[in-house]
Figure (cartoon, rainbow, N blue to C red):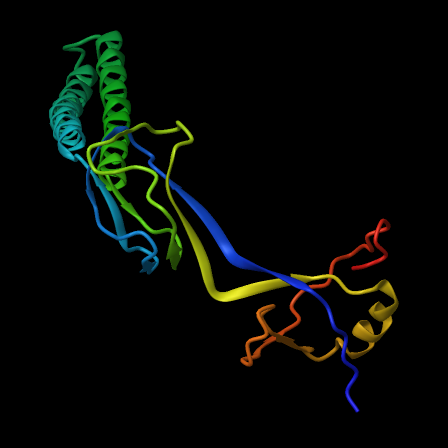
Length: 217
């Protein structure tokens, strides 16, 4: 005869994500409808990419220029190295050529970081779903200006497959749950409306403390 413990539970999404913009710009397209089921990585919003494309092109141009200067500086170091051995130039001039080359290589490294940052901003202009789930109401529309770091949510996604049911049971039942908890315990959930369908799940988590005000866990 199975032991059954009745309880009242609350349905909760497995994950909830408030989607925000990581760049500042104008929304040009909303690629879903409110209440749609979306997959992870699916495009949700598109922000005007032109400012980010221009910034990337500028960063790439600066990188190309500084790489050319660094290559020329390396050639100067090679030439000065041969000349300093014959005393045609001073050691100080050779050291200065090396310092210039090193500084230009550091500039190239900084330029590469700027290019990566510009590429990332261009990617952020396309906002994708971080999780699979169901979308809520649209909080902004096409044409709205969104700002990075403003805390403005564009839409909330709830992951409901699978879904969680959180419930409390009397602390007196905890020893039995622990005794049989070595194997997954079956949980059957039924809606308050009295619907005939019963959904089966597994007990996945037991809190580590009893609520002293209610005597439940």
